[in-house]
Amino acid sequence: MKKAIIPSLLIALGLLALGLAIRSGIVRVSDNSRVVTVRGLSEREVKANKVTWPISYTLVGNDLPSLYSQMQTNNNVIIKYLTSNGLTAEEYSTGAGAVTDNQADRYSSNAPLYRYNITGTVTVTSEQVDLVRRLINNQGEIIKQGIAVSPDNWNNRTIYEYTELNSIKPDMIADATKNAREAANKFAADSGSKIGKIKTAQQGQFSIEDRDPYTPFIKKVRVVTYIDYFIED
Image (spheres, rainbow, N blue to C red):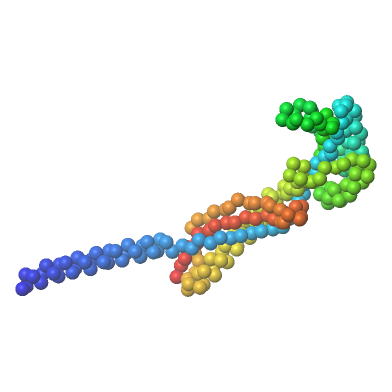
């Protein structure tokens, strides 16, 4: 009987030791994983500080030299409109014109009414965004002089940009980090703990997008940070 008890005791002691070892391992894993990952967000609305406005129009006819002459006249009318309203020669440029020979279209069986289409473009690139916006709104003054300005579309669209991101980056990163810590503190308070040191931190990319489709000259700048905090009792 005593011989049977001794092996049983040895087995029990072994199981106890194994249990303690497993429990110790779980505690270390738990201790090592006492980390909370939080996201910090910072957003700002800024005004665009650069605008590119292509002023395009199309001429049709059968005499190419005459069309080029008309294109030059149209360009001069547009340039006068721009300069008389405050833009400088450094803020616009003229293109050579894009010519389409309709008779060269091998896939059309219909004889074209006009042989040539020529598209002229005067491109405004300026940091005077408010001024250019006023000129865009008043471009009817160009149309009144017989120039059929092409509508704003994907191939001929006005582009607004914000180019001063570096000036606001530090403050936005600080705001995102503060936002992340506030979230971590709230989590810790709810769990009866406190936040310790930062384990790792990852800064996301900055994004600049239109605030909405109707005000492309107002941009939304956004950055997200991901921070791992140690949790302490």
